[in-house]
Picture 1 (tube, rainbow, N blue to C red):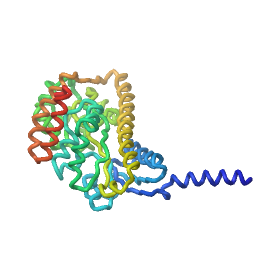
Picture 2: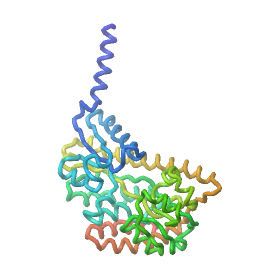
Picture 3: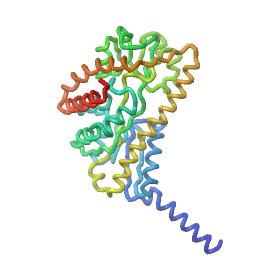
Picture 4: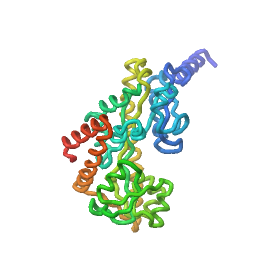
Length: 338
C-alpha cells in the first residue's frame, strides 16, 4: 500500500472514530415508554442516531426500551435521581404526580389532527407550560411530539355524537371514561389485551384502542367493521426531556441542535405513522365488509364541547391542571376549535 493510500485510510478511520460513541463528549442514557419491537421505538432510535451525526459525534444517546430501568410511570424519578439522563414518553403517564400531566398529556377530544397539537405545543403556549410543569422535577422539556390521532373501532355505525348514546365501549379509566360517559356512552374497564375478544363476542360494541394501522394489522376492523378514522377522541402528547443540570452543561450549539432535532423527530414520527395509516385505510376501504366513518367538523366540535365540561371538572384537581385548562381552551377558542 502506498503512503498516499495509507494516509487516506488513516484519515477515513479517524473520521469514523470521531463520530463513534467512544469519542462522544456527552453520553446520555434515555428510556422510552415503548417496547423495542414497536415502530415508535424504531423511529426514536433513528432520532438518537441522527443527533449523534448532527453533533459530529459529540453526543451519544443510549436509548433503552420501556421498563429497562424504571416503570414507564417512574422515569421522572429516574431522571431526578440521576440514574436516567432523559426519556421519550407519553406525558400523561405522570398524572399520578400532578393531574396537570394527565390533562395536557391527553386532552381528550381536543385535537382533530397532529398539526393542531404540535402547533399548540410549539407556538401556542404548550412549550412554555411544559417547561414550567417539569421545572420542580429538575427536568428540561426539550420538545413535544405525538403519534397519530387514534382511530375508534366499532361494531355499529357511528356518524356523530348522537350515536354514542348507550354505546357500550372500552375506554381507559380516568378522564377518557368521564368524557365518554358525559357524551351518553356506557364505558367499561377492559384491558387492552382483551379488546379483540370483547368485540368479537359482543361484550363491547366499540373501543378506544390505538391508531388505525395497528388496529387493521391486528384484525380489529374485520370484527368491528365501522371504524371512525381519523378518530375524534385521543391524541397523546409525547415528550423528549432530560436532566436540567445536564442540559445546562451543554454548549449552546448542542442545545440548539437538540431542540431542532426534536421538531424534526415530531415531523418524522407523525409522518411515518400517517403513511402507515393511509395504507391501512386504503386496504380497509377495499374490503366491502368494512365502512370507514369520518366525522364532520361540526360533530367533532360537539364532542369537544362535551369534553370541555370534563376538562373543567378535571382542572379543579390541582392549580397546575387549572393552568393547563386555561391555556388549552384559550388556544382552542382563538383558533375557532371550540
